[in-house]
View (cartoon, one colour):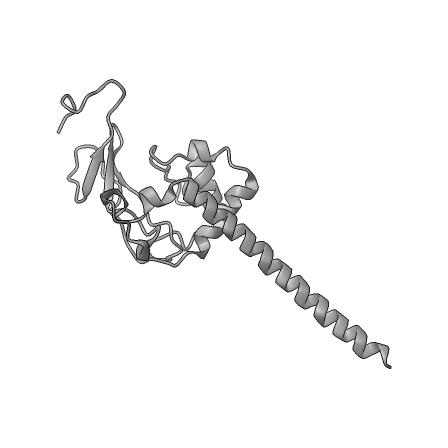
Length: 175
């Protein structure tokens, strides 16, 4: 009889240790994802105010306030990549986030704008891509709807940068 309570206490302690190990592994993965998002410059295109020299860190990764005009594509604005279910990627699974990061394919079938460097991110290891996805799911959700992409020639409702094709100068670019 003496051994049964000790065995029970051992099982409880072992379970608690395993649970804390799982939390530590998740924390390490999220920390790795934060590092990769930081060095990858995700904040640049996905945080309001960044391109004006005053990033609004209260809306970190909540979507840009600047559009990029891409010849033949139109104008795109860096999306809200926080886990907000209404305006961000909160309804995407980890696997869907990884697919978007590495193949440029959104869950709705739309292809990401060519300015998104998914071709480079396709070279990430599976662990690193997963760490980024886990980190994106862990950030504070920001409710911020950014404008949908605008086709060439349509009216733009946001400040924008024009990306010129190779060899074209600003003076020759159409207005």
